[in-house]
Amino acid sequence: MTSHTEAPRTETGRGDSSRLETEYRPRHPLEMRRAVMYQRHGAGDPTMFEHAGVIWRASRTPLGVATLAIRESTPGVIRGAAWGPGAAWALDQLPALCGAQDDPSGFDPSAHPLIADAHHRHPGLRIGRTDLVFDALASAITEQKVTSVQAFGAWRRIVSWYGERAPGPTPRAMFAPPSIEGWRHVPSWAWHRAGLEPPQSRTIVAAARRGDVIVRATQRAEDGEARDRVLISLKGVGAWTSAETRIRAFGDPDAVSVGDFHLAHEVGYALTGERTDDDGMVRLLAMWPGHRQRVIRLIETTGVREPRRGPRLHPEDHRDR
Image 1: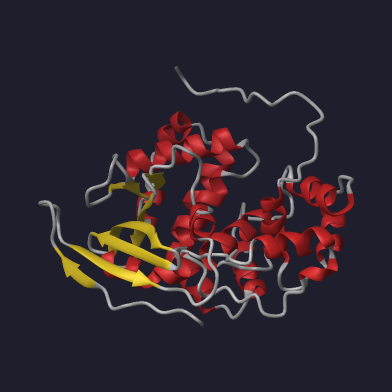
Image 2: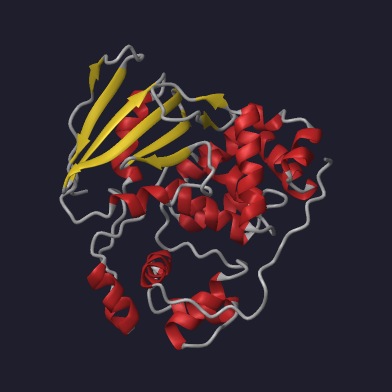
């Protein structure tokens, strides 16, 4: 790929624990914030937020927990600093998080004027990846069949209660998600108190029992279809959850979250002026084989939205007070 990273160097500063730093200079236009902040789960996400122009991210890497701070110091120069046992891994993965492995070659935006204009306005749009499969899977399961408010709230509570405090000089308390074994042993009462429905909590626990196998199998898989087969073999994981996992963990440029409550309507309205269903959305996106997620991201940049047809849903809260 057309990217370059310097070797990380160790520094110590302001009495904080040792940190590593690196610099990433992409050789293509890059909207860094758009690529990276896609990984955030709502404004209160304890694993990720933005403060004073710096994106802070806590993760559980294969080498341990790490805190990563990212900023664009000058146009085209991304600076990264990291703390914790997984700091070196997090810095090595920084280009991928920014979309360095996303290959837009073969993408023809001219098939639709809206997409052509969006692509012209956003030549730096890249799809990033975390390479952290189980975190992506667990977060996707929490978002099954509920509103964003419910899903983000449940994620925030479980990660804060059972995750690990992030190292380094974070501007506010941050937490890395639980380990696979940690997800498996979250008690049943905690899921309920967090606001997660039993079908979702059971699916996460069941997936955690096979967590290491799932991670290895998806990492070895040759393409998105092979990863999809691995993921949907899990009870309680369907096409939507698999797509969401592949988008976040692997930056799959072709994944489409079929079954999403709003997505088909939004894609249909943007491309035709009328809402459509999942089958219609798939037919419309077939103009861009291999790049359907890229088209969805470009649609998001346009601000074109179907007018709301009813009152906002106010979810009931069945947790014990």
